[in-house]
Length: 237
Image (cartoon, rainbow, N blue to C red):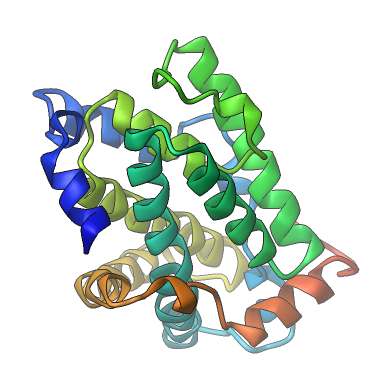
């Protein structure tokens, strides 16, 4: 609770007139960090027949949403955002290391690192930074870069988490449209149905205590591991 009160009291946590547009830019598929090249195990799940239609894809994504995104990424965003506001280097290191240790396969760790490197390079070119926080001093992760940009552009943490959820779902649904394959209409229906669960995911993330932060998605880990040797692949994970 103390950390959340700190966020509410910081002037930089208040949204600016253009903060929503900066958020749209951060979560846009045109952001050059390669998000569209990853399926996070979905490609192998389709190959294995675990995901074969819109209903099974929604079930797959729902499992990821409530047992990884809500319990790992969203709480880590809160911790990183607060640590950046306070210039707490130790907390930033702890949060980044926790995120890396929770990526259970070679491909998922590589994805985290590669997205982070790409986003860090982009933020440097855009002169996006936070005084007292040298982003290059930490292992590169997408979440750290997003939080630095959010603090810089005065995007409130709740807005950032909403945007992250949308970006995550859109990327994976579009991957499913190509892989299953699904028609564009089924893809949009799936996206609507997943988005309807975001409020519950956000509420769950608010109940996650520090010792509870982590991911429990064994099916995703298995799919990601087997994807490394999949014969034909469109995606990098």
